[in-house]
Length: 52
Image 1 (spheres, rainbow, N blue to C red):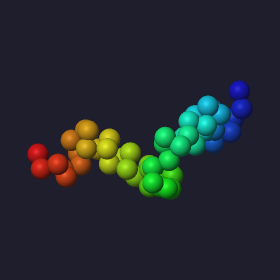
Image 2 (cartoon, one colour):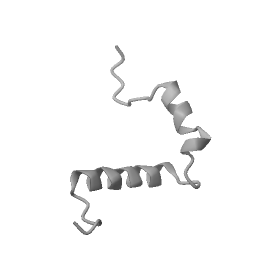
Image 3 (cartoon, helix red, strand yellow):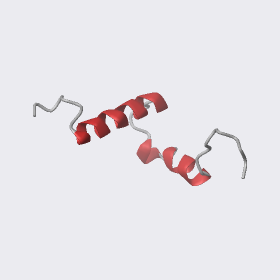
């Protein structure tokens, strides 16, 4: 097993991320990660932007 700490996603994951269906309005990768984090926090009830 390689000891490289950098985790490289499988080629199929990269291909899926590059699929047009997942190209949301030219978002950058960091913008997508931020949005995903917001959705996760909202789901967990930490992101208090839904009025509840």
